[in-house]
Length: 222
Image (cartoon, rainbow, N blue to C red; front, top):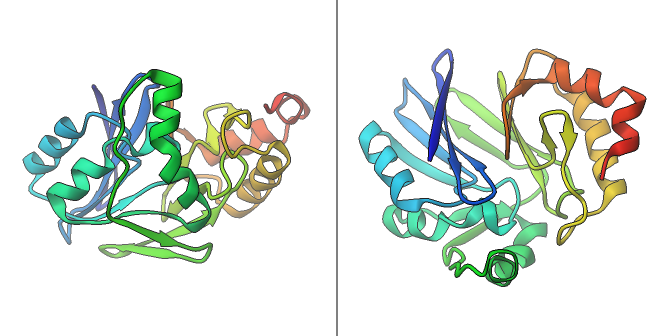
């Protein structure tokens, strides 16, 4: 499991590359409060829990940008260990419940979905120390796909990867919805914000806006 870290003032982001599809799980913490979130715990639950224990941080939330199985595979184990519910947008709840079938179909892999589940809506906010992470609804990759924006960081899930939009040929995908979501996203989020995607390398909103507004990018969106 590869690990990378970034720091933004009192916010720290540790990324863990998990599973067959090299999904990025993030442990986001705020140093003054000692509080942390897991975002998209996709796989390798034992290693993620060990990393959390080593930090001494207090986990307060398990958040999912969407409910594809490669982003929620470790949620049940982490939830059982910490007694914290896995939180997902209400429009992805059905997809979450179907995750074991997709894991079996795509990887012939057994997956137990989280039994503690809490849903949120389009206007949800999540507090982490002095920062507030705002839900930005970005349907297209899935019906309940979101980005999480807090201060200098945007967690974009599979809505926006580095120089590519999210796939729309997977369960719940819709290409026109994704195009509209990306239009809103680049118009809403400031240019210097760091993008932490669901797969691949981080980049910035300045880079993303320049890429998205090019004619070629819009034409090749899946």
